[in-house]
Image 1 (tube, rainbow, N blue to C red):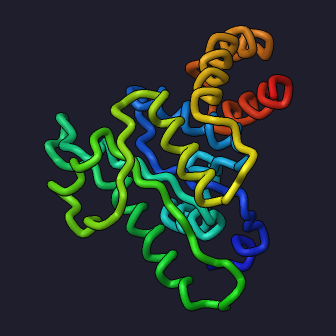
Image 2 (cartoon, one colour):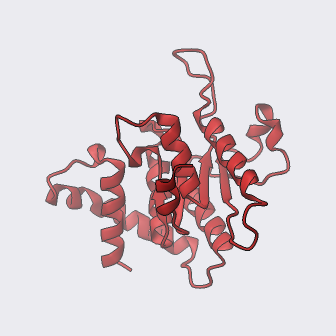
Length: 213
């Protein structure tokens, strides 16, 4: 990886690998909120919009930067328009797992290991198309923000060994309050909720959390 990617690495960065589809937005927004509420930094391919940078290089640098990764395979299905499967999420999961494996024996004692949460709509659906993942725990969100938040919270708290994190029910309650107030927050900034970029949404979440801890 280029030196600039290594220099900016942070132990709190979480790579989010998910579909950028309007129908998925409610799950994506809930995941980003949960990551921020737990004191971590959500990152994804939408984080940078550098037209001079090749997309795969950008994704690899983000993965290298983030010790944690959330990978949602729920849109791993046939596209009705092209009749072809959507493979981006499983491909990026493979990149993350490959980099994690490559780092296992590098620089012993420096804690370079990566950890990931694999999500799907249903827990065992992946077996029909990604049997190589057998043996890994897949968490099901059932297509609901509430269960997505609970899954992210349980995994991040376990992997970071936090002992002071709020419970899932509290985070869900916070998220619902935030969503009710989001239209007014956007109106005050002369923005529209549906037009928020990833960076704008993440910043709005962080500001709201700082005022509603």
